[in-house]
Image 1 (cartoon, one colour):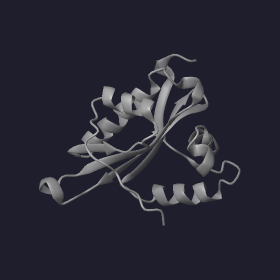
Image 2 (image 1 turned 45 degrees about the vertical axis):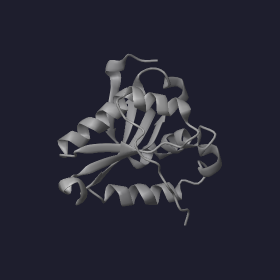
Image 3 (image 1 turned 90 degrees about the vertical axis):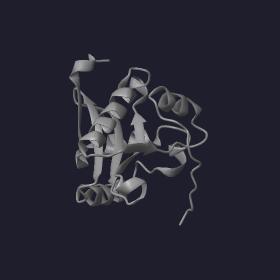
Length: 153
């Protein structure tokens, strides 16, 4: 593993998609819902995300290798006295980098970016089966304050 100083966090590009999708697929949940062999839907999605100023898909790069990713969405709102909030999604760290502090650096990047966009709150969801992730987020100051619901369409 390289020195932490060589880490770059930058916007994701189309050329990063194979590495991003591979990380999304590299866990028990992602293995059943991602398709690294067909990048066309991901390319379309990244084009759409790139066109929205409230969407920030970033990658963490060491040397020439994409080793982490996340998506940050900024949501202007009316509740909480018209507070703007951000949502962190799709946090993934390459298997070789887990435990290196990279996840902390990515989340710190997202919190800093949220502050720069005048967000009053950062929120995220995590699958109920991801106990290690829950401990990680709590260690960073997040609280498990709500119950999330989903409806598959």
